Length: 322
Ligand SMILES: [Zn+2]
Ligand SMILES: [Zn+2]
Image (tube, rainbow, N blue to C red; front, top):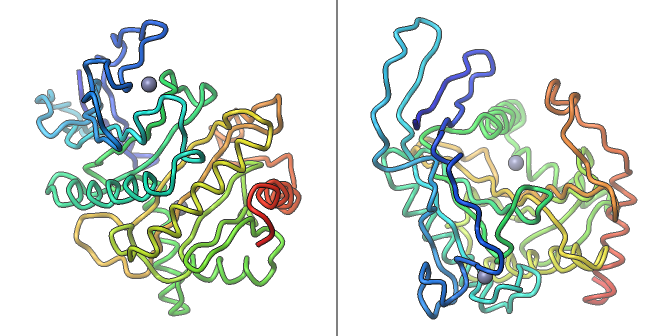
C-alpha cells in the first residue's frame, strides 16, 4: 500500500508505504553503488539513480477513498532519487576533489529544475543522511532527493515567518540573521566571498551549522558559477572539519532549504543549507526523545559559541587562518 495520509491536527502529510518493509538486507561486502555492481554504469563521476524503493512515484497506485469526514488520503505523487557523489566507495563530501563537488552541485541544480518543473511536485528536497546513527546502511557517498507533491510543514513554517518578517520590516529574515551573526562573530565557523557557515545562535544540535549565501538567492539554480564554486568550498571545508573532530566519519543530516516549485512568489525567502549532526561528543549521541518529539522542544547540552570555536580551531588546523 502506498498513500499519503493527512494529519488534520498538525496539518501535515505522512507518507505511508508498506512495501518498504520488504526491502532485502544488502549482503555484506556488496555495494550497489560501486561500479561493477550491475546496478550502476561501469564508469561514472556523479550519478542520479532512481531509488529502488521509492516512497513517492510519478505513477502512484490508486488509493481507496476514506469515506470519512475527518480522515483524508491522497495518491503518493512525487519522485525519490539517489545522488551518487563519486564512484569511490570511501570518498565523501569532505574528500572529493573540487571538480567533482562542482559537478555534484550542477547535478543538484539540474535536478531542482527538472523535478521542480513537474506539475505534481511542489517542493524539491535535497538532503543527505550520513552514518549508521541516522539509519544509513550503505556507506557509499550519496545523498537523496525527494520531490514532494506538497510543501513540507517545517518549510511552510519558515516561509510564513519570513513572509511575516518581510511584511513588517521589508527585510529578509535569513539575511538579518546572517547580518547579526556576522556582527557578533563568535559563532562564525567559516566564510568566503559568497557563503558564511555558522553555528546558529538558536542551535538545537551541538554541532549544527547553517550555510547561507551573502546575497539574496532563493534556490540553487540562482547561483552564479563562481558562487557554486564557493558553495563547494564551504561544503568541503565543513565536512572535512567534522571528520577531523573525532577522527572518524562524522554522521549528519544535511538539508537544503529553498523556495518551493509551485510557481508562487517567495521573494522574501532565502536559500540555505542546514547540517544536523547527531553526536553530542565523541561517544554519545543526541536522541530525539520525548521533549523533542512530543513537544518539539530541544535541549542543547552545549554552548553554540563553544562548539563554533571548536569547529573553527579544527578548520584552521586544516586550512589555515581565515
Ligand atoms: Zn560503494
Ligand atoms: Zn531552514
